[in-house]
Image (cartoon, rainbow, N blue to C red; front, side, top):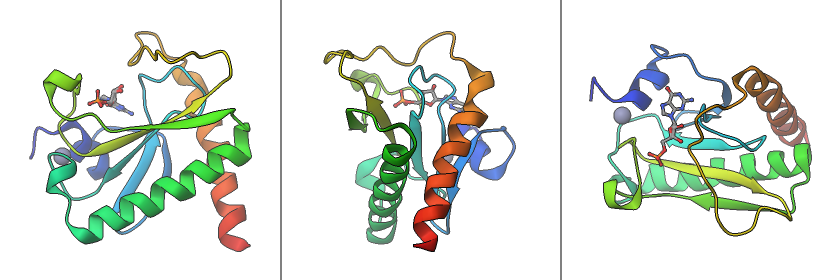
Amino acid sequence: MSDCVFCKIIAGQIPSTRVHEDEHTLAFMDIGQVNPGHVLVTVKKHADNLYALDEVQAAAVARTSVRVARAIRDAYAPAGLSVYQANGQAAGQTVFHYHAHLVPRHADDGMALSWPVKNPPREKLEEYAGKIRAGLAKRSLA
Ligand code: 5GP
Ligand code: ZN
């Protein structure tokens, strides 16, 4: 999938703010995000969607999502965290390479989320990611 935007991010051809990387998964900050700590968890080998994940990828995605979610909790203490995985254009998906959205929720968010947003504070992404990376490092030492 040479024209896949996430494959290009994984290959380093498109820059991204990385939170975590291992053999099977990459977690990075969504440039369309509005909430601090909105993270995308994706697989390093192209898979169109959830149905295309093999067992190893599926387990790795779950592990990375749980670890990053805990680090987000450590960093921001949000009131909650939502995990989104849309499938297909009808579900509003815009990038067709498997990824989950980890979105910290705050008490006054309500049920509706309006993302992707048009003018994200990109200059803040490195700061947000740094806090999450620090949480991951602390937990891997423990
Ligand atoms: P989807 O709507 O497909 O579930 O989510 C795709 C997400 O990928 C969008 O929220 C969008 O902001 C994000 N995205 C698209 N292109 C890029 C990019 O080049 N870099 C980063 N970091 N995120 C991207
Ligand atoms: Zn891809």
